[in-house]
Amino acid sequence: MKIKNEKLISKKIETYYNDPELWKKNLNPVFLGGVAKGMIPAEFELSALVKGTIVEFEHTESISAAMKIAMDHLAEGVRKSHAF
Image (cartoon, rainbow, N blue to C red; front, side, top):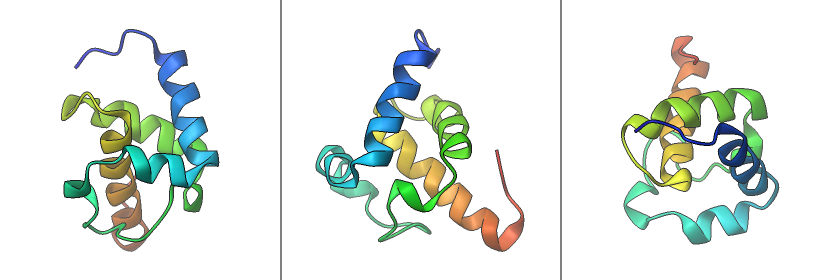
């Protein structure tokens, strides 16, 4: 998916980063597993999470789902040196 307004997306990511309950509320339960299971956005560096979330928009139009996919990759990167 082509990002139309990256600044708006970044602002929404920052909102979810600062309010994990709002992020969880907007996350489809199908995304609750994975490497970052049980983790919240604030456990990751914000800039890496923003970059990764924007990359993961190729898989979904949901900001919260793209964030979770990015979080899984970032959590995996801690073990396997994977980063965006």
